[in-house]
Image (cartoon, rainbow, N blue to C red):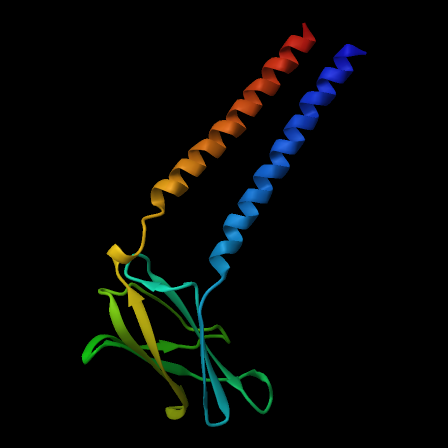
Length: 180
């Protein structure tokens, strides 16, 4: 009877450890899905640009997802190409054309070079005809304005790994003691 109780306690501890690890991991993953959304109306359309950034910074690249919504149909609108421009003051940082292939949203990954005021401009084309456009002001913070979180993430990961490893070793040792 003692053997079964010890095995049950080890199994309970390992189950709790796995549940806690999965809970913490799920919150870490969810934190990356929240971001700033830029929207404006342009004729019969709503220009919608979603980002992965809670604030724009020179420290990390920003992912921009471009979409266009029909106001009348309340649904995604078709477009062929997208012209994008990013300016800091009068200095043009980026100009490019993105294609909307197979109903997928065009995506741009961009790292801002300096802190300051930027302008993001997007022009949506269908069969070489301009159908919508949007222009947005972006405030970008610099490296010195944001505390570096890498050491905190590293220490948290190492501690979590140490606890999981220690729990597994403890469970294995307890299991081996019970067997003898």
